[in-house]
Image 1 (tube, rainbow, N blue to C red):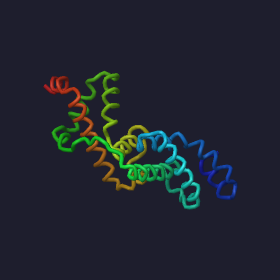
Image 2: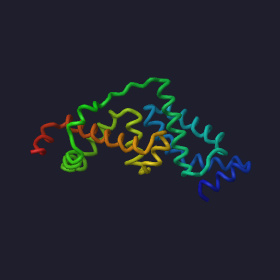
Image 3: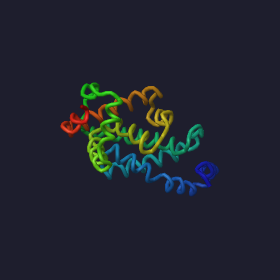
Image 4: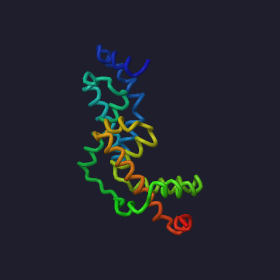
Length: 189
């Protein structure tokens, strides 16, 4: 059975069927919460709150999107609210730093590194993104959600998602350049 069949069972009063939905999506929700909150304890609370909110609002799920997308939005909003309450500090990447690089520079220069180097450098840079930026990157590149789904999850317009992803890519490249400017400058010539 798929998610919708379990949702139908829960809505008919078979509340035990909700356990399947929790088991099916708990890793995704916890992973999302952990990436935004930055610590395991808060992530566990966010995940629990997310499933409680989803359960209470299950009758409001209109099935215009996948259940996982709807659940992602609840998890995202819950985690952001928790983070705002705790006022977690992040190290911002400067927009002005990124403006001097074109999209072609980004693609060309990153491709010149070995896979191991790229992976390590990208992991370091991703840790510097704030929760919103990281979420956009994660949803688009790692979870492979569409721009429309990301907009729905994060409450953004389609154009905001596209512009934000473009700016984040430029920031990431600028930060990668700062990590290894000699190698990048040599490659630029």
